[in-house]
Length: 282
Ligand SMILES: [Fe+2]
Image (tube, rainbow, N blue to C red; front, top):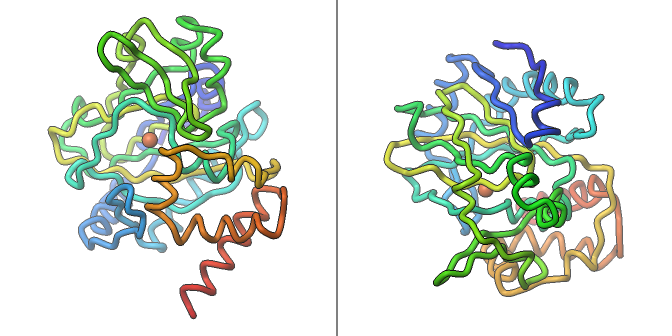
């Protein structure tokens, strides 16, 4: 495995970092086996596979080392969440966006990290994530990037000759563009076991779904900041759709916000977990 040196600087300046051989071939094979076992998450937005808890536990020391490597930088994710598989074979093929659901819960992507690890990857040059590096975006349209930085739940849309970025949380338009995001894009080529470390505010899309690729995505978030009922209740048609697809989880979030106007993210996550555990065992 390579040293994690450079990861903090790349994440701060470019919004991403490629870490070669982040996961051993043995653990990659174990995750691929988990995917074949076919355990799936309840979320109806996407068809997501779930890894075995014991294999996630084996990955954990690698992510803890990564958190430590980032701890003295201005980008500091700290709380390791669960992991899910995104597979092209399950119809995963997204256009340009900043992630939605993590933003609805975290309410910011300031310290939010996506650790993206292909575990089935027939061709390094195919079926990766295509990304817009932060420095490319900021150089092309600095004022627009200042409104997008640290944010989420937005989508690049085009119709006729018009191109714009929609706000899928509060609704409306964040900004217009006179170019395609593809013009600013890069596609890091990944092999099974490599990790693409991505900030939550990085625009990304599926490169292609021509090959059968399965990637594990583990999320790490900052959890000390305050989240508010006002932010959660601010919504639009697109956000409502997401909330309906994953209703048990968002119902639990709503229940917590009925009790608190604001609270630290870690307290929200702990209370949601407790509510959902009691529901599932009821
Ligand atoms: Fe995404």
